Every structure is written in structure tokens, then in C-alpha cells.
Image (cartoon, rainbow, N blue to C red; front, side, top):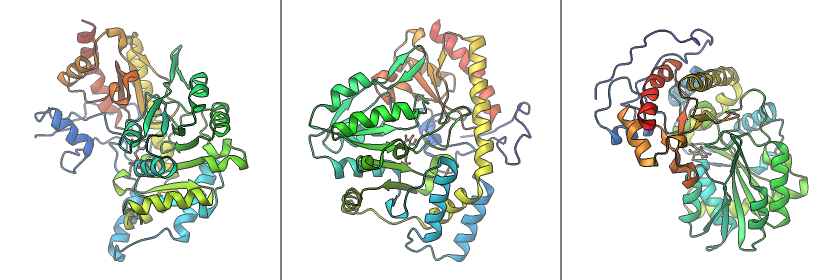
Length: 411
Ligand SMILES: Cc1ncc(COP(=O)(O)O)c(C=O)c1O
């Protein structure tokens, strides 16, 4: 598998950050899940092709985090590790600074991932056969977390209206009324449609769920990836104190700082009884503890890397505008959803009138590896999810191939 990344010209973003968000990386030999999926689809991928699928970034880890990991590896025994006071200070300090939220220390449970925490919550707070609401198109492990634990998937699909994605509160009002519906998994911000739910939207959701005794698992892994003009509201901030027992908030430094491989998440459950039920279910799966390198990396990310995050957000915005502006000129029939949060653009190609398999085949033929919209539920058929977290030159080159692919699709 030959690889070469020859940048044609510096992008318009060049030099606007003290960090390196410009140099294309070769991740072919680092065990990257995203790159390996691309090679599974085509083992002879052309040199210089970078996939746009799985939600991690084609950027070097912030140097502050790299240094901290090196120092930790040099001085630590890397033995079993727990969330120490300084770890908790960093996590809570971040929630306060970035989200004006002041959870208590004892609400926090660390887990090696948000997905495993969602599976645990489904098992802890519902019985086999109970209904669990999800709102597709949505991050596909939500479907698995319900189906693989023997619960019933209850779909309350998002509404797509005038180019905007909204929650269907009328549909939700019906669904929560069924007493066997016990839990709702919320994606906030929403992957893949890029919505940052407003406080009003969250308040409506909360009223409906609480009134009907439905617990809300709020997956807020994308909570720091918020574009200008939007504000993320932590679900518990939209709740009244008496409602906290209906809620679990899942956060992590993994998406924000591209350290998903370190497997470290911070889960908040205010209600002591619910927290203990959650922990008990967790330990039944043999899970627990905190990765020794993540313990330090999470602290440094939250304490020292806010500047890196600000520059990252600027480059995501820049890349999004590149895609949207380019398509508005060349293929205005492609609807690009507003990017309020996440680094994932959601493109509607349904005007081409092709099925999901054909779209995927044509994209691969043009060396484009996105996450197919159909992965996120039938509501996503005819869409592509484009991961924008890469150097702008990679996007610029891909747009040329995308133009050709779109011409072929529209044929
Ligand atoms: C909404 C959402 N939740 C969870 C995850 C993954 O969480 P983890 O790697 O912590 O299990 C992702 C990754 O893309 C995601 O988009």
C-alpha cells in the first residue's frame, strides 16, 4: 500500500494556528479503524487518499497531551488507576468553564467509553422487552445498544423540514405514553445531522419524558464541538432539581481532543440510587477503572488545551464552508445541513434518485470513503456523512473527486 501526500498548494487556512492543522498524516500503519475500513473496502486505494468516515481526526494530538503521556509513561508504573482529586478537579473545572455547569464530584463515574456506558444504562434502567426510544437518523450504536440487550427499539424519527432537522414532539408525546417505554437515548449535539438542541427543545423533551417516567440517557460526547452562534445546553441544566433522577449525562475528552483510543469517559448521574444501580450493572460486565495514560491525558486536555480546541473549531468551520460553498456553485441540488455542532457534515444526495448501495459504489470508484447515511437508519438513505476533521487541502482535493462522483450519480 504505497502512500504519498503531496500537498498542491497551501490552503487558505495556512498559518492561522500555532498548532499544526495543515500537515496531512499517513495513518496507514497506526492501526487506525477508519483507515483499515477503507482498505477493507479497497486494498489498492490510491496514494494520498484519506477516508472521511469514522469520527476521529486527521490531526496530530495536541503537543501538551503528547508531552504529558510521554512524561507519565516515563515516571509511572502504569498500574491500576483511579479518578484522583486532581482528575476530578480538571473534569469539573472544564464543565464549569465551557458549559457553565456545576455537577458535584460524587455524581461522576468514569467508564472506558460512552458506548459501553449507554449499554450499561439500558441494562441498568430497563428490563428485557421494555421499549427504548431513539431518534434516527442517529449514531448507529444506539440501535445496537437496544437490540443487543433484548429491549425494543422505538423509533421517533427526526423531522426534516425546510432543510432543518427537528425532534418530533407530537410523535414523542404518543410514544412516551406507553408504560413499557422506559428510556430515551438522546444524542446532544446530534450525530449525524449536526443539530445543537436549544434549551427550549430540551425542556419540551424533558417535560414529556419526566411526566411519563421515561429516563433520559443524554450522550453529550460532541458537547465541546459547537459552532459560532450556537450554545450547547447540558441536559441537567435544562432540568429542575427534582427532575435530575431521570437523567444521565455522558461526556468525554475523546471527540474534543481526538483521544478516543485512550478510552476514557466521564458519566454524570445525580441520583445516588440510580448511580449505584448503574455501577452495579457496570461491574457485572467486569468493567471498571481508568486507563493510566487517559487519567493524565484527560487532565492536561481540560487544563491546558482550550487554545487547541478553539483553533480546531476554526478549522472545522473553514472546512465546512469550503464544502458548502463549493457545492452551492457546482451542485446546488445537494443539500448541506447547517453545521451547528460536531465535525460531521450531513449531505442530502436524494435528488440523484439512487439507492444507498449505488451511492456507495460510485463514491468508492472516485476514492471517496464517507459514512453512508443508511448506517444511521433508513431515514439516512441517500445521505452521506462527511468527517471534516482533516487538513483543508485534503478536503479541497476530495471536492474535485466529489464533483465527478455527483455528475456520475446524476448522470
Ligand atoms: C454520538 C456518539 N456517541 C459515542 C461515540 C463513541 O463513544 P466511545 O468511543 O466513548 O464509546 C461516538 C463516536 O463517534 C458518537 O458520535
